Amino acid sequence: GDPQSFTIDLTGPVSDTGAVTDATNHTFGNLPAGTYAVSEVVPAGWQLTNVVCTDGTPGAISIGVGNVVTCTFENTKLSTLVIQKTTTPAGAADLFPITVTGPVNGGGNVTDATDLTIINLTPGSYDVEELAPMGWIMTDVNCSANEISQDADGAIVNVPAGSTVTCVFSNLSALDFEVFKDFQPNNAGSVLVTLSCASGTATAPNNADEVTPAAFTVT
Image 1 (cartoon, one colour):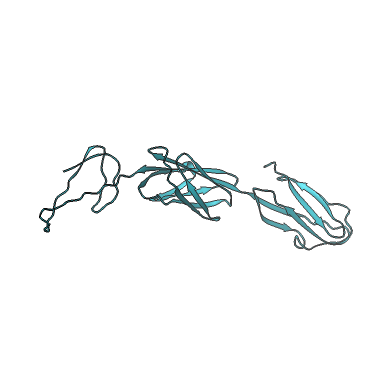
Image 2 (image 1 turned 90 degrees about the horizontal axis):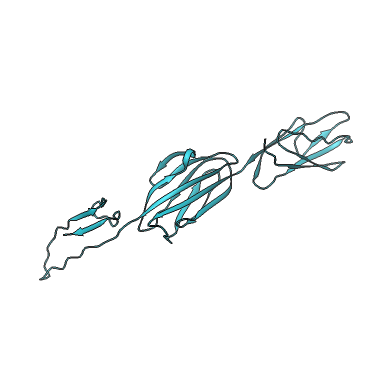
């Protein structure tokens, strides 16, 4: 079990404090009869998910002469999600917005070779999405074994309790260009523009304003 210590406070006719770790007990003994309450001081990085008492509720436990009441506290360790960014070419200063939605929502911006760290996440499935800025194409996202599925803008990942999950987003710089034709005299006309690659592969659907980098010639 986890070595984290949890402080338990008892209030009532007698007040006391104890500490427990995973799968251990603390006994408040020799209590006079009366109504008591028990509470937990939740440490940073943990969440109190449930507490059950064999008699009464944590806020109102009736202790009679000679009886024993047991309260069980259940805690879940919170998780961390790290978003890393790589760009081609390297060293891009552009901001890449990241949104994280799931049991807890978060987000922020990353640049090339920087990290966005989101802490204190409740375990579960999260949708991690990138809004690529103008002039950039997302080419890959890798969340390792925690990845459930991918889409065009990111991935859905499983974030287990107490874990740190890392997702790496890779982006490629897009190439913008325009072709102008000046007719002399100024009458209506048309011209066929052919885009060819000296190397690499061009991706340019009709009316596209971005293509992947390569060496181009326009004829």
